Image (cartoon, rainbow, N blue to C red):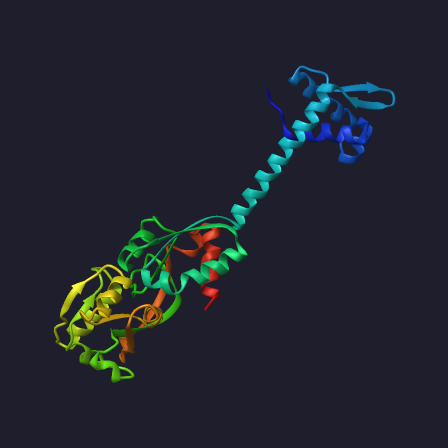
Length: 295
């Protein structure tokens, strides 16, 4: 059985107008064509839908039942059209985002909240990864958008600036370095460190800085998260390095203090990467526009 939306719409129009001639005038179609559509509909359904008189038409019991079903079906088709247009415009969809913990902790919650206020039907699938794996995920199309704290020198991804942050030393509240308003990193190398996990951009930066100074960096304990690092520093087991914004947040929870690191490398650029903006799904393109316009 083939029921096309045009025939159902014409059938409902006939019921509303009460005559085939009235429907023909309303729909800008020949009366014969309207009559043919209704006859084909009756033939397909194997039942009489209209009672025809010289005064017009009235629905049969089957016609009344079809009118209810037809309205539901046409509304469903309209909903399909509306929702599909929302996908094409980006107002509905899924955006796959990978970001490092610094980005997720410092910046994304507020930016995603503002984005959802404007596009409530877009779902953000957010996954935490280290910067090297973020780039790999975007390159392999496992993610639409990557946000990372690392320089990228390849030519197969498009990179846009997102945010900037700065690294600080965190120390126990009774540490000897607390008298300093800022510190050169070489002075901190006289103390034991609590390090972050392998693959951490912060680990890479500070280890590279120590190498350039031809100094050893004594990592006493290596942990997998910012909160664990702060627990260890609070316990007096060593000092650590965190972004200033995150260090300020944890200093309200733990008995630790922060000292800005007075080095150029302590100022980090945070970037957004994608295969290309033109190739992104519409919702992902809107998300990238939102993040870059927030700057």
